[in-house]
Image 1: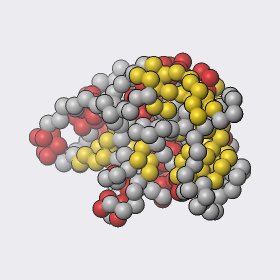
Image 2: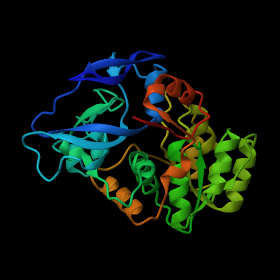
Image 3: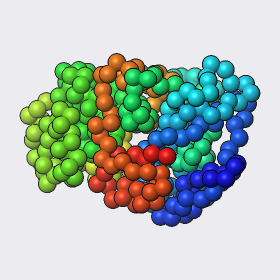
Image 4: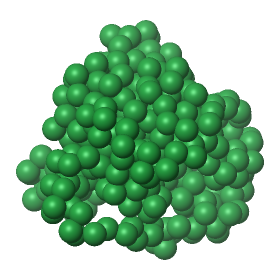
Length: 339
């Protein structure tokens, strides 16, 4: 690109993403500018692309999963250096509201959402508050590093439930979060039963240590097998209303159902089932700042987990429109793009 310009992925309207020339952003005093190197397509990006979010500020530079190198420091930034490789934490809680003060920054009343409600990182350069970039050690490779953000989502979800290592879990929906949660849980000593309608995703989960159910498995079959296996917690990661309905209907007596998916349709719930069966419905969204990012990075530094195992396709940033369209089909577990 010419001096002062960059290539950016612009969501012009639903189902229309264009690579356009835009001015290179200038960091404010407490921000840093990154040269982006590797990007990940998230389910939230697909939701924006398909027009499922009514408050999308078109046109928008989308994207929130990414790693890059610090290229410029704001005048009031300290503790970071030019050239450092960093990962973006793309949800910016205010740190001042009642939710932040009570340790629930994931539902901050004034949270800024990078790449969703303001310009993101699907571009050659991105500007991020310095507080929300994390240096990455040399022993973490790029493909693992670019998945730190969804790994933090999965880690937060896993610890939302009272289940602990040695317990039996079930996961419905094997997108990136479902697969990363499965990998984490298997590595930590849980027994994990998985269900999805895409055979390839089930096969990948089995490689990560999970016990599969066939895509055509009925709700009654799930209920019978979950009861027999002693499932204590079900994670709904599909983000589809029928999945939550199925999870609650098939849940063993006294189980917890953790809602991780972000369906935009209503699920069918029966209060009688919940109360009589003692089913608890919990929710988990993103992660707690800063602890979940710190923990996720440490797990990678220690070689405990390899999130890159869930990558289904590698392509380049120039193929962003086609990659988003492919991701919207729901068959990929994770598509990453080299800038």
